Amino acid sequence: MKKDEVMMRIIHNGKVLDEFSINLANTNPDWWGFFPLNQYQGDTLRIAMDNSEHKKGLRKVTATAKLMNHEKLYHERYRQQVHFSNKRGWNNDPNGMIYYHGKWHLFFQYNPYGWNWGNMHWGHAVSTDLVHWKELPAALYSPDHDHMAFSGGATVDPQNTTGFRKDGIDPLIATYTRTGSGEHLALSYDDGRTFSEYKGNPVVKHKGRDPQVFWYKPGNHWVMIAYDESHYRKMENGEKVKKYQNAIYTSDNMKDWTYQSGTSTMFECPQLFKIAVQDEKDSKWVMYDADGKYFVGQFNGKEFTKEQGLRELDHGGAFYASQTFRNVPEKDGRRIQIGWFQTETPYVPFNQSMTFPTVLKLRKINGDYILTPTPIKEIQKLHTESLHKNNIVLNDSTFNSSIRGDQLHIIANIDRGDARSFGLNINGYNLNYNRLRTKLNDTFYPIDDTVKLEIIVDRMSVEVFVDDGMLYYALQHNSVDNENNLNIYSKGGSILIKNLKIFKLGSIWQD
Image (cartoon, rainbow, N blue to C red; front, side, top):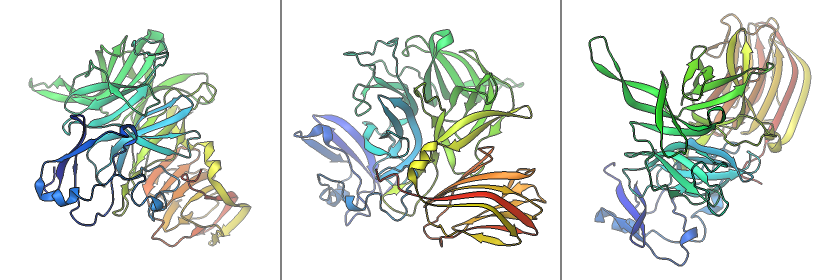
């Protein structure tokens, strides 16, 4: 804890509900954090603090029917309008992404009481269309600051192998790391609004974190994949060295787990899933870690076997700790991904956001398996003004769009022609292809004839999808403080813009 922070507790009937560190303001606060009181109406809550020097700050604590400064909520200058961010405080890793009882549930790492990382809770938001989100009260709290709620997943057990079914309800089961303890289960019988800890926690105790649990039908058992530092490898000189890996455990009941195997060179927030190979009858398993590096291979329920070397999903540097939704309806069938979008904002009541939901596909190109993300089709729900053009020839010249703004969806198919270079300039962000260097910005990417560019622009970010996800950039860019402009240019020759679509995007906060 930093020296200018104090430790506080919220207590109900002698039980600590939440313990957290906070820069408590003795004068007018920069912003207001909040603790939701929905389920405590009519009860008395007590606030305790370790340091009496900040007692003036306690006098500013108040109970209100609405969030302080609620009239500015979602209208703040730097608030992303196309990408989810929480009302107040910090967010990072998406957690427990699942379709459950007709809604898409997005949980996430969350600090309700600070602009920086810390005080890890599970925030919670739901959506009916994957575009418009409603934030709910936090799902998992930290009654002990030394045992915070770190990342994990969520699942359901329709076969009741766990015995958790109650009154005909198969609960939403959160699987997560409680720091200083191990891997925990928490159960919700009210659609993720409240969770209760499984009394047998921790179900796995190791030097690791970020569990993901799923049912492996061929083996009729549960699989847990988690980042693990508790295993060692023996060097030639006899010295033992930590083995960083994605560890695989199995269980018949989700309560008793057995270690089976591990895959090295992976780090944090692992995912493991089966996915069809496009245009083929085959399927493969994909394992990836927090920075989007992934292996493609086979999985027999206990061990993952690599079939090709490590590849990268993101080339922009702002993408991290992604997850894909579990329990997606069969009639939908998509593998839908959201990642933590590292979009630091100027000092305001919120910080960071989530990437726009994408559909992951696995394509086989020249013998290599490549994961390709593309924006979900529901982005069309945000389309407002539009511009459509075909067959624009640029010869050492520039096309200036009449549609500009902080929130844009751009789709362009461009024949590279004989231009030395060409690209797009969007609110000060330059996406440039250099024909001589065969590079798109700093990434090696040969273009034979034509290239498809799809771009999502928001107030603090840009996402670029090249050739339907063959290349993907997620990066921070401030459109708010830059002049709004959008142009396409060619240098040292001509290009043909075969077709161009530009849409202004509405806000995900407007239903």
